[in-house]
Amino acid sequence: MSLAASRRNSCRAVLCGSRAPSEVHPGRRRAGSCPYFSPAAQSEEFSVSLNQPMFAIALRFLLAVDLWLSKRLGVCACEESAWGSIRPLVRLVEFSGHVVPWLIGTVYSLLRGDSTAEQEVLLNLTLALTLDLLLVRTVKTLVRRRTPTQNRSDIFSAFFSERYSFPSGHASRAALCARFFLVQMADMTSMRVLVVGWAILVSLSRLLLARHYVTDVGFGLVLGYCQYSLVERFWVSWDCLRDLVLLRLREGLDQAYTGLWTIDWKH
Image (tube, rainbow, N blue to C red):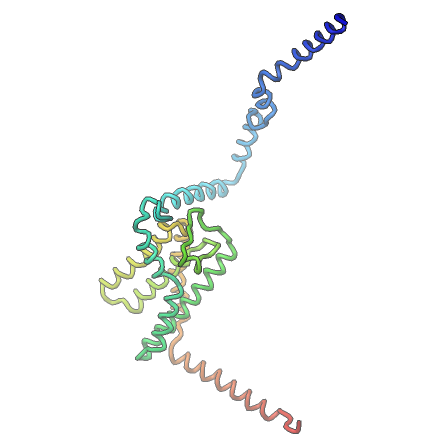
């Protein structure tokens, strides 16, 4: 019995001795088996990054700068932020650039207009706001860029929140309305300064509240500025609208009159 027990103990000692190196240095074994820590894997990953096109590298760099700058500017994202105390004021500026009050106010002013020239300007402003709404929604649906993670939806803004971020509809609308007023209505210098300042504050509010990225606001400003050129090119005059409405009305009456004669009254 003692001879058999001594043989089993010697076998256990040999087995334990063969396992000891792997158990004493588990980290070395994992480091050696993980390809991330091997020099060959690092050189391969580095070569892949160098083989990428310069356009892709530049685009990634710009997106990284965009994310960093947008995060630094979101100082009113919540009440606990650096400038969280002025968040209600910034939200008020944000609401002044929303499409709902602009459309309601423009249509109401159009219906209550005193002169034909005033109604013509307000009519084209309504068409410009509608065009801006459709273009921004189309681009957002195509790009599908998510809003920043810092974006916080409030009880009021939850009804108007959107899933997609690019481009900023507020910035596009601010640039469009600012250029529209500067060309059509704003004659005094003080009024021009007020309009430009309002457009800048509305665009800046989207960054302070972390609603959009910097590139969203920048592209929105460019889009809104270019939209006015399209509106000015296809400007709808009041006489043209009246002739168009009368023509459509006349065509509708002719079709209705023709339809009355084609009805079989016997049945």
